[in-house]
Amino acid sequence: MKRALNFNAGPAALPEAVLARAEKEMMNYQDSGMGVMELSHRSKQFEAINEVTKSLLRGLLNIPDDYEVLFLQGGASLQFTMVPMNLLEEGSAAGYVLTGTWSEKALKEAQKIGSAAAIASSKSSNYKSIPSFTEIDVHPDSSYLHITTNNTIYGTQWHDLPKKVNVPLIADMSSDILSRPLHVPSYGLIYAGAQKNLGPSGVTVVIIQKDLLKRSRPDLPSMLNYQVHADSKSLYNTPPTLSVYFLMLVLEWAESIGGVKQLELQNKEKASLLYDAIDSSDGFYKGHAEKESRSLMNITYTLENEDLTSTFLHEAEKSGFIGLAGHRSVGGCRASIYNAVPTEHVEKLAKFMNDFRLRN
Picture: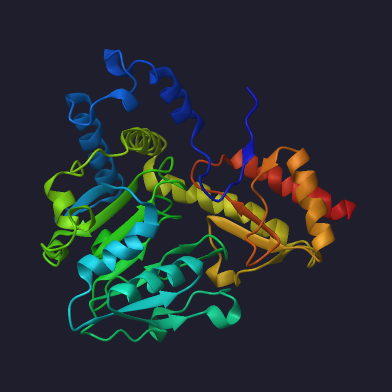
């Protein structure tokens, strides 16, 4: 079977072993005579899927018992609203660190709810770098501090994450969750859309400290209230059952290959292949991100002009590479190399980049 060399930014590649398992179970899950998407979300089979998935995530990320794991809908974009609705306290403010488009959008939504402001930003340099935490002054009375740990459009990532800040740290980890070890107690809340490292689109993971759930006001709409979803074990309404099932399969796959530490090693190896191709090109390829802020998930780079870029992308597509066009705000090219992208595919892309440079 022909498989694309998939470097899409999201929805992105899924592990082939996961797809094969899902194909096998698509018509008949555990002798139920139904596919998972046909099961009642109140059935014993799906309740087991729901609980196993939470348990796997807790194990892989070492999530302490004083944190709830929620499976919600609406993507990270809905969390831009739910976070301030639930956690932004009356008479207080929230601080946001701007490192790209998604953190800008998160701040914009928070400002519709209450007092929120950017307390650090790298926008003046077109988001080529990540601010240092030593430069960030968080007011101790702030309701929380919000960061976006990986920036898909600009190809930057937080590498120097704090062990502790003096207010709850909220992190959008949509594009790098499960890609490296994580110290969950450093965070008050973590959220992530699934469609990059966790599974297909449709389910959003929220990891929240139980003490923070007390901030969820009872007058909030039920569907936007973290406490409601925690009380109902993420089954308040019909969940995205198929997406949760795929999330379970991806987590089982991650566990089978050695867990998050092994994934981090693989991701570093993959990223180094492409950054080496960029750095050894004598300026033929130019990376967008500053070296100390480079992402292990999204490698962004430009060529000398639009004509050469167009030729590169055309020849890459003919060679089977999918999803390499950069975002319009940066231009150039972007290779997204999430957990499920095989190292062999990245090796092929690095070779193609080197060969293209020699020919042009």
